[in-house]
Image 1: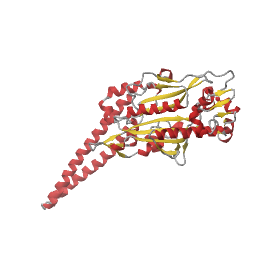
Image 2: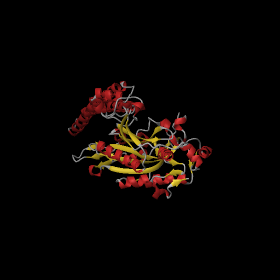
Image 3: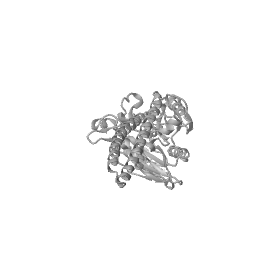
Image 4: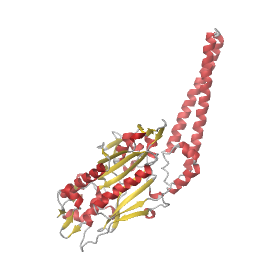
Amino acid sequence: MLLVPYIRENREHVIERLQRKNFKNVELVDIIISLDEKRRSMQNQSDTVASEANLLAKQVGDLMRAGNKEEAERVKIKSAEYKDQIKNFTEQVALAEEELYQALVQLPNLPHTSVPTGITPEENEVVHEWGVIPTLYEGAKPHWELTTQYDIIDFELGVKITGAGFPVYKGKGARLQRALINFFLDEAIKAGYTEIMPPHVVNAASGFGTGQLPDKEGQMYHMQVDDLYMIPTAEVPITNLYRDVILKEEELPIMNVAYTPCFRREAGSYGAHVRGLNRLHQFDKIEIVQIAHPEKSYEILESMVAHVKSLLEKLEIPYRILRLCGGDMGFTSALTYDFETYSTAQGRWLEVSSTSCFETFQANRMKCRFKGKDGKNQLVHTLNGSALALPRIVATLLENNQTPEGIMIPKVLVPYTGFDRIG
C-alpha cells in the first residue's frame, strides 16, 4: 500500500509511474488526495474543539476552587456542548479514514525506474540467457506423453480423485519431486536462508498483508465457513510472520525459505498451452523471502536472482531472464525478474520463477517496521522469489533429457533421487 504523504507530495510522479504500469484509474490519485485533505481538515477541527474543551475543563476547576460555583456550572454546560462536537468529529474522521483507506487499497505499487514501458508479455526485456538448447532425437515427445509412457505422473487419476489440474505422482515421478524439493531447500540453506514450515492456509489479514486480497481473491481457494484461504504461494505465510512486528536494524536482512504446496484456481485457464504440468491447481514450490533494509533491497534482489540462476545452471537447464514491463507486472511488485526455461519438445519458453522487490508496499500493509539507529521506526522492504516452482522444471527436465534409452537425470540430482535414469 502506498503512503499517503508520498502520494500527496509527488502527485505527478505517482501518476506517471501508475501509467507505466498500465493502471487505468489514475483519477484515483486525485480522489485520494482530496479525501486526505478532507480527513486532515476534520481532524484539525476536532483537535481545535478538543483544545477548547480542555481549557474549559481547567476553568471549571479554577472556578470551583475560587468558590464561584454558579459560573463553574455555566462553563460546564458549554464544556458538555464541546464534548458532543468532539464525538461528532470523531465519527466523521473515522468515516473519512475508512473512505480514504478503501480508495488507497485500489492503487497498485509503483514500478521501479528501470521497469520498461509495455503492456504485454511480448514487451518484456530479455536481460540474460544461458545454456544451449538441446537437439532431440526424432520421435521425441512432450512431457505429458512421457509421463504416461514411463508411468510416473497420472493426470487422469488426479481427475478421478479431485479434478483437472491435480496430478498424481507415482514411483520415480514422486521420487523426482522429492529430490527436487530437497535439492532446492539444501541449496537455499547453504546460501544462508533459514527453513520455515508454515501453515498451508491463511486468514484474510495475511492475504491482505502481501497483496493477494483484495486483488486476487478470485484466484484463491476460499473456505467460507472458516473464512480461511489455501495459500497460492509460501510468500503469504512467510512474509506475514513479520506482520505488526518492529524489528531491530541489526536483524536485517531476515532470510527465510519454505517448501509448500501451492493452490491456485487459475480461473479461465484452458487450451494446449496449459496441458500437462504447464498449468496446475496444486503444485509444489520452494519460496525464498527476505525482509530487508530499504537501502539494501535492490542489491539483495540481484543476489536472489543470482541464487535462482545457480539452481538452473546446476540442473543444466537452458534459461533466460526477463525484466517485466510495467503492464505485465503484478499488483504489489516494484520490480520483477521472470525466469523461463526452454522446453525443446514443446518448442517454447516456460516460466519457472518470479523474483521481485516490493519496496515498502507490503510492509505498509503489514505494519512491518524496524527501529533505526536514530530511534525512529521505518518500514522495511520485502522481497521474494520462486527457487523454484516444480511443475515446469519437471516438464523441462523430462523433455530436454529424453533419449531413446530413457530420461537422464541431471548429475546434481542423482544423490537425491538414487537413480540416474527413468526408463
